Amino acid sequence: MTRRAAAIAFLESREGFGWIVILTFATILAVIAGCGFYKISLDAYVASKNDEKGTALELVDAFVSNYSNLRLQLGADSAPVPATFRAHSIELFNKTHGAANALRLHWIGRAGRSIATPPADAKMAATIESFVGRADPAPVSQFVAIGGEQVFRTVYPSIAREPSCVDCHNKLQPDLHWQLNDVMGAFSIDAPVGEFVHDLRWQATVIALAIFVLIAGVGFWMSLSHYRRIREREAAREQAVAANQAGASFLANISHQLHTPLKAIIRFSEMMLSEVLGPLPNDKYRACVADIHRNGSHLLGVINDILDLSQAGAGKLELDENLFDPRDMLRSLARLMSGRLQAAGVTLNMELPSELPALRADQAKTRRTLSHLVIKAIKFTPSGGAVELICRADRESGLAITVADSGVGMSPERMSRVLEALEQVRAPKPGSQQGSGLGLPLVKAIMELHGGTLRLESAPNAGTRATITFPPDRLVFDALRPAA
Image (cartoon, rainbow, N blue to C red; front, top):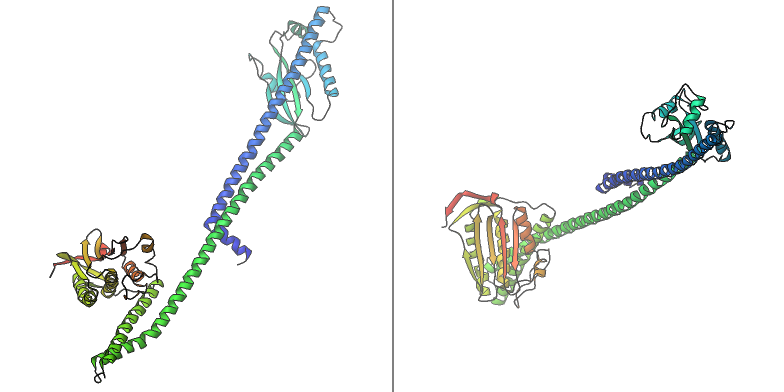
């Protein structure tokens, strides 16, 4: 797979979608953090500059007011009027304090009523006039561009607080009739902010990018790591499935190869036991032929189990369903097992209800599952013990058939493994035949194919109960009939 194809596959996966969500979250958080830093820093700058401007303005006001009072007290009419003195002082301050980023002060009169410096534009005139008529007008701050330079400007109202100031203005402008607390103009204090705003924007951008890269990078690493683990697990699962299918195909092929000659051996041994072609020379030959027939039949059963289990693993095991009475099948099974029961010294107790619905299932495979369970119960029940075969039907839970023994039982650890293929339980009786480890897994596979379940209940020295349950939709209650 090329890098481009791998990247597309990652982005189209659930983990890739999760990373896109993380990218979106990182972008939003980065924008919020950058804008927040910018606003907080700008607000702090504005507060700092306002304090600085307020201090400068208080000094100018105090100085000019004191000059005006002294001029009036000393009668120095030949000295410059306070307005002119103030304008010259501000001009000198700006020249002396002429750094590029220093404060610049201007005193501006009202439009049509100024003595020295009228408003430079209509916006400034409107700002000054907005102070008129207010009891305590507040300064107006804003960012403006002057001559291509960005400045932070604050306009402070200039109010006539001293009688000497009012008298001076009325002498210069007798027709305007100035009074105490009149707005005579405004102080405009400009603080250059171009360099500061540029640096602040750069810092905010760096912070936003750092947060975005950090969150996006960590999210990408986590998403990619999880994606790789998922892909590795999927690849391992696919390899396991392929290996399982290959093994199942191999077992099925070998089983088919053994099936035909083994059937011939069994048929020939049956003919010899029946003496179809003539009597056997002596009883030792008969015993040998009987062993061949018994072991061949057992091996054929194991091969059939391997074939069915491999087909079930490959999803190729099919059901041949028909409608039948479970009681007839159970009675037939009891007769079939009578020889094993007698040889093992075990009794079979059957418990069948008086009425039972017909079952729609694969009768041969159902008989096979119960044969496996009964044979295993006989094997693990000590001589003199009993095996129980119990059948129950319910419209809600379905048909349940239980095979219970009074044997040695199993521990929970052992019980969790017996449903795995080739997992063998140690034979409990000396001389009893070791199982193939295919019976219970095959029973489970056949029941799952029917939509049913296999449930095991066991404890050490308390026996084992195996229950197969068919779902309710496989029961035909219209076919109820009394037990024969």
